Image 1 (cartoon, rainbow, N blue to C red):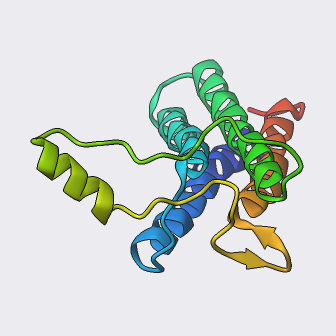
Image 2: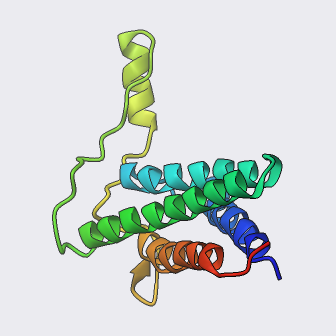
Amino acid sequence: MNSLYPARWLALLLPVSLMAGALGSQYIGGLYPCEMCHWQRWPHYTAIALALLGFIIPGRGPKTWMIALAGLAVITSGLIGIFHAGVEYRWWEGLTSCTVAASAGSTAEVLADIWATPVIRCDQPQWTLFGISLAGYNALISIPAGILVLALLARKGRA
């Protein structure tokens, strides 16, 4: 079997699934992301775009590079998840104060936006299961899956 085929699907479906879960927990479940949560999302968005390119660009070589980069992006999100989980468990201090960004408009509008926006601290998980936060689960899922994408691409005999 062509190892590019499962690698390509994993590189696409994993970040799509994780982002569906993250956005669902935000917009349906009311779990607002902190700044570090957003940091974890950007590599997943990148992985989705790269994996889609791996489906549409011609040539096995370029496809392989796009899928490999998508796998690395997924691993990057997991590594950020480790850092975020470490901040949540107080293993180390975070790099951000998790402040709210102001929007454009008059001073009154900016203040109204700030007061209406929930300030979510990066060092306090909003949800855990078995003592593991969403950042921890992102790391536990993303890093092995990204490594699996790369391992599938490295298999000999792909066509």
